Length: 389
Ligand code: FAD
Ligand code: DHB
Image (tube, rainbow, N blue to C red):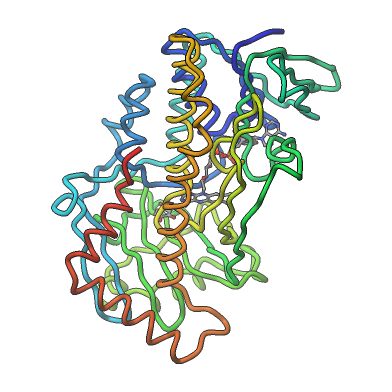
């Protein structure tokens, strides 16, 4: 089989890239290790930047998002019983869109299928060959059947545990990592959200986040120990702990119910450089991970897709290599800013096991400054709604 762009990974990055290329008549094939049902069953991000919304519009996949998604003009931040609002719309002129990653992925799959896009599921043993030449190709198996895909370019959109990053030789690749000493326990419940906007909360007992998917579907997270397992946490224990970490006024009106999903995610900051080697380009979690505080993971994947799509478009439409040659540099500049924001927001909002009294005072001062200083709120808001591409 032959295609222009071979895309490894059928998560949001791979699908969005494939669909955007399709709008320009650039042919691609997506190889996904799992089934479509499995990919759609993963509950992950929930907040989209305006840049992401625009990309979905450009991809022709934004109708359901505009009909069913919720634009949010601000967010609440609480510490102890103190609570304040950061008004994104007033500070930046831009809201964010609350619309789940599952829904984004579903819309993208639907669009690819409608357009007759080629997606292979259940692929195994994907190997990248000759990425440093003008004629790269992939080999892989489906149900034990060996296959080959020739292409002009390879897009590595296969997430943190994929094969693409590893294909960049070690003497070229440099990795930067920070592991956080806690995780997030998240639940999804068919209950009305406690508030019409998100609440990022910190307390003596650690971080909590009140988020949502729609009027009757709430997503809540609490900071937990890395040694915890979701089964250790009964729903009752989760709700009780969440209530202890949010202001009393909110806790009193929290509607609880059975969880329909419960999982723990570790927190990590990670960047690999460069994001391009020859004709292999890394996109999204394949190249970088942020701790989830601030919802930058999926959004940063989308900005990579923006740069790569435009680079490939320029190559095929104008014969210019400028866009693909500058891909890694442009993408990384924005990636590092998202890393900084996520690291800062995480550092301010979590309890660390080895935290000194001084560290605690610094966190409170940071929060007080953000609560009372317009310039600090402006900086926070600009980062939260998404820095320009
Ligand atoms: P992925 O979504 O990881 O997609 C990669 C795809 O590649 C997968 O479908 C995978 O099956 C496939 N694949 C992997 N290896 C291979 C292979 N060898 N061959 C073929 N296919 C392969 N972000 C937020 O903003 N907010 C959140 O609350 C949030 N929660 C998260 C919770 C968890 C548990 C995780 C892991 C991430 C979370 N994120 C969150 C991050 C966000 O979901 C990711 O940034 C986003 O999914 C990145 O999209 P992606 O397409 O780059 O990678
Ligand atoms: C969600 C996750 C986040 O990490 C975040 O900062 C905001 C919302 C969510 O899953 O809804």
